[in-house]
Length: 129
Image 1 (tube, rainbow, N blue to C red):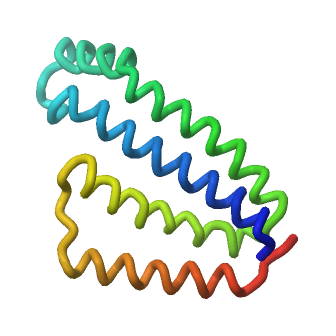
Image 2: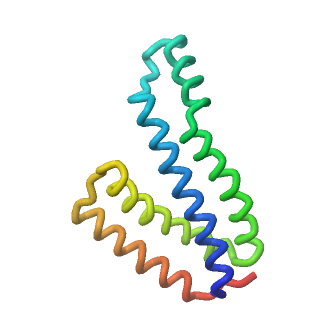
């Protein structure tokens, strides 16, 4: 895979990962959302989330990531590009641990290692359109 192609893919993946982290940060401000809270409470929660800067930032990152991803797909086979989305799992696991104090136990570290090996194998397989 060409370096520029990989950078397009990585850009889309990282924007998607940032979107997830921003959505998590915004969701934390709302607390746990339960569907049994009633329509009025859910409406207030939804309105609050719709005005939350982190939620809006996350949605913005998603929109930009789609544009970047389309550029990547115009350059690389989808069978190569799509597995690269798993890089986002690694980024999100590490940043969620750092930012939100989420647990990274040995089993998760092993899973991250397997993902890294898989990404390297797919990236080295070629995949130009």
